[in-house]
Image 1 (spheres, rainbow, N blue to C red):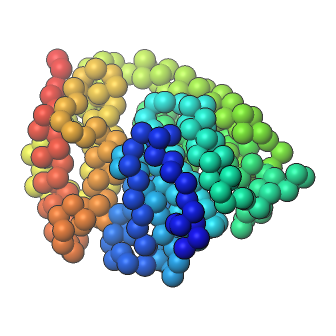
Image 2: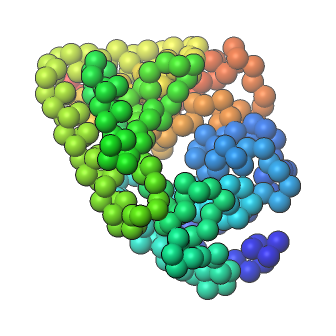
Length: 300
């Protein structure tokens, strides 16, 4: 209650309105939809008494109360870069800290609920689309090598143990002993190396094979009447690959990445306003995709 009462106005920094939701008042499906859209984490899914979340209108910012920590701030965007995000969220932190002082040690940094987050208390994330690189036989070894740099790389999607559909998340393994700037520079350096390898992998495949991969998935997504989650993610990943290579032109209100989030069960059930069983989810998922990509087109 104190946080909700004393929270200063941060909307000028976000250029967006902000609203509050009591998590215990949401259904399990609604909380799951929030998690799928990366507005809350696993800890907040339980909806324990006193937990809540502030969310900006564009959903780029969220602040969870009384979950993993008393306050958990998250800011995201497409393509803006970590330094710009850090400047914005640092400004938000300063404003909140003036009204609601954080527990801080000059020696150890922010005192968080998890020892692994002591120090800056900051985890920076980069979501990368590296479909061809992730299909290489040596990708597992490459992923394991990231830990030597203090970076974790894991699949953004893990559906029944199947491959990650080309989306991978990089984040810093530790927060103690590194400055915020150091964390961002480390992640940027590693992501640049991975993108270089992905571009190299794309040049080793003919344009005909790349376009064929994208066009086949476009056809499946355009006409399928049933779609399971992994299949939908796989074909949308190929569509994203085609868009980045100039074979697919996106149109309409949603981009391919947003569709990959929207086809998860919680979001589909919120979108259609009903509880859906497994077969209904497959039908609605296909319907949702068909509607969303009708303004997409292929470029020959």
